[in-house]
Image (cartoon, rainbow, N blue to C red; front, side):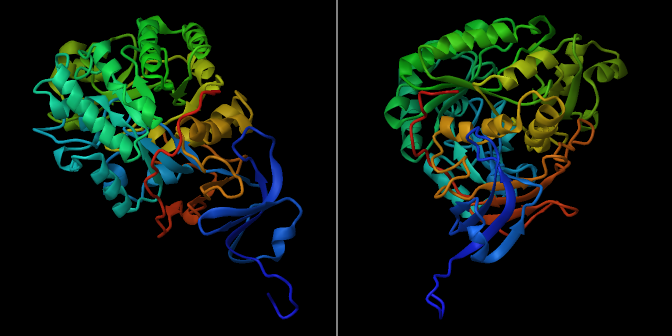
Amino acid sequence: MDSNNTEVHRCDTLIINASVIDGSGSAPFAADVAVDGGRIARIATDGSLRSWHALQVIDGAGKVLSPGFIDVHTHDDTNVIRTPSMLPKLSQGVTTVVVGNCGISAAPVSLKAEPPDPMNLLGEAGAFSYPTFASYVEAVNRAQPSINVAALVGHTALRSNQMDRLDRAATESEIAAMCAQLSEALAHGALGLSTGLAYGNAINAPTAEVLALAEPLANAGGIYATHLRSEFADILEAMDEAFRIGKHARVPVVISHLKCAGVENWGRSAEVLEALEQAQRYQPVGCDCYPYTASSSTLDLKQVTDTIDIMVTWSEPHPAMGGKLLAEIAAEWQVDLMEAARRLQPAGAVYHCMQDDDVNRILSHPASVVGSDGLPNDPLPHPRLWGAFPRVLGYYSREQKLFPLTVAIRKMTGLSAERFGLTGRGLVREGYWADLVLFDPDTVRDAATFSDPMQPAEGIEAVWVNGALSYLGGVEKAATALRAGRFLARQAAAPAVVA
């Protein structure tokens, strides 16, 4: 109280004059937002917060204030600990990442040698030092990254822990050991299980192995996320397998980076989405996707073709070849594409394997949320690592008018939090954690390109993580000294509603 017995309200941060898009899909509204103790303390549309005493006041005139973006599909598992500033994500407004996708995770992992493909995308052997999931949680919180971290457990990681070789099915005793490790992870807050059944070190796992491994998920309120066994001609059969696993385990299914890959698959997105909608009639199913027509992973001999451009991003035996097209390398060496790809192994690649119409249809579908699928350890990463979320806002929403800004933000915030059980996140709502991004809707865009991918986005003005001002845009485009991220344990079962 002051001397006149008038109550004095105080807060850490006051954001005034902003156009709030709250992540629910509702229309924008003009408001002031007070942040205190890491949470959203008050939202007012009548100017009543202007009398509050704030340590910091930010004028959001002409800007949109939205929930911080949730990157539901990342491979930042080891980077959140080794490079906790996490500028590639923070600079595009991301405040939470979901790691452990595609069957590969940093924990629980006990390596016997070098990490098997594609776990090598997460780092070299020294980056894997978390034999239990609990030890990974402790390491994340000790590193205190600038963004929040939630985690899936990778099927390939579990196989690597328990099997002498990965080109076969697991035995009953090996499955039991994997289930025990998965159960320990779920007890310490893991979101669920992920698989990458298209990769060489998981493709020999029969459906029965995954069915058994998914059984501990339901009691823990977990989810099943999958990089399908095929994203090419056999995609419908691969989707059926995923739906069967979800039904058996009685858990929601998330199809990772849904796409129609390969020239022979172009134009099938309507058919693929119809299959997803049919499954939704009987079980909770959703998908994530990234806003580009090119994918990126290790250089996979099964995907070598002359029908698309394939750019090599790195090669252990031939590092100078990074940034060149596979066709150029083959011509330089006077060999065919397959021989060039063999000589480059192990290596990474960007595959220009999709069509705009299919990406547009999948991205705009009500079941889709946004994930970057960026590879932070690539020396020449796909531009999605730095640009996925502003690309949705700028290119797809503002320029292409694929969907309104309210829909774009819901796909990157509220719907994502709902699907992955991240309670208290994803909405601008009183009492929720103050994960927020302030951006200019007229200028926000991705600056990262395939030739120059490590570029921060334009138009991101400020980012708060758990109430801490963690990034400032403008000329500097730099993280602040505040790192307020934390590990987010699963707090709620994923909902039956998926769209």
